[in-house]
Length: 114
Image (cartoon, rainbow, N blue to C red; front, side, top):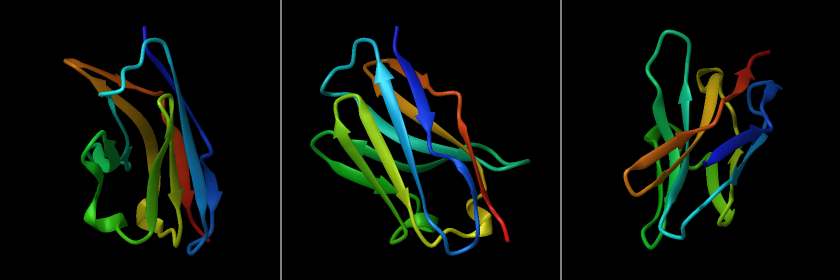
């Protein structure tokens, strides 16, 4: 069974930075896709960024140029978030897809506020 554990959320002022990390356990395959989604209060969960093996990275337009996703190894994905804005506030979820299966972490809260 695949499990995902996120870390690195917190409270930060506008313009600040945070780094999120996600560690996966269980059977992970090299063709798996890992990424980050977020959900703001009252809104649907949305893609932030993902790494697709052999295809590179995808980012939401709202975070391009500010966020950087990296898959450090088969089991770890990180999200460096710079120039944070209040609208980046939400719960950030790590996601892994392999084959027909999809897994989610429990989420980590990111709050951008002065």
